[in-house]
Length: 370
Image 1 (cartoon, helix red, strand yellow):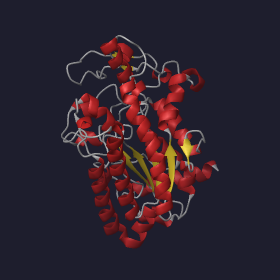
Image 2: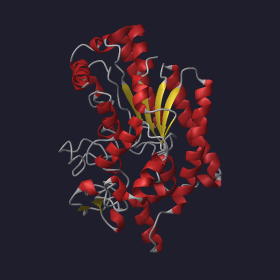
Image 3: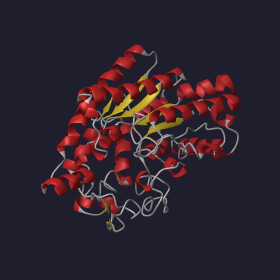
Image 4: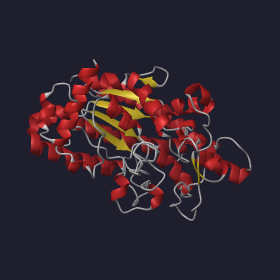
């Protein structure tokens, strides 16, 4: 079995360096296309006109695995990086780097730190989900030009499509002092976010996509950032409840929408990851999962190292602390998981652990031949 996996990985790597048709000649080849926010961004924000608030292309980001900052919001690899590894694919390149890897046949990562489902979320500083969709359509044109309709359609229908979205649509309301709730109820706003997201999924489906991996919203109320905010404002410890309501509504509505899609769209398959529950399990019981600290970040400053100072490049905060052993920590900075956490989440997804993965495992999506 090991030699077979080694062969499959070598073939995928050869595809990215040589003739992409070699990939498609192998009937088991499945590409990975990635959309979303900073949980998945491999460095796309390095190439856009934005601010360091939405970038991670400076030390100490990347120091554990890559040994240099790639633009990933972690000390190392992200969940899509591990899923690619499990699927015997090379690291999936970001959109602005993908052209260097001829043919795009292993997939492309379009994710952008700070992006949301809504165009208005951090507008002008990020690549919103609808623009990511347009970039995906650009790639389809490239594929059809290089491979022809038959082979490109085969690649698109067999590929897996990963999404992480929603968190920024909710966080940004509080960080920008939005007045949106003067016009909409919380339920109406969440419906807007999910409606926009579902429309993108439908568009990918129209282009041939059939196999989807979708994250729930994270436990935003219990991130180091949220804990620090609560402590600064109230001198109390614990999770910040004002972030909880929107994520709870989101995570109640989204699974039902996916069930509806499965009934309405022929051949639609999905793996829904209850990221909220998986992360909360670590926060509540860190030692059970091999962590020592799940409330305080490894990198940052202030209470819980929850201030946005990691790397000393954001705003006026130039001083920051860096933990001695990142492997002890769930969070790398005040928002984002460590590589160790990301490996844990990817393993749950790949294996389809029942209490946090619904419908089917990611492994089964890669094994399905449509």
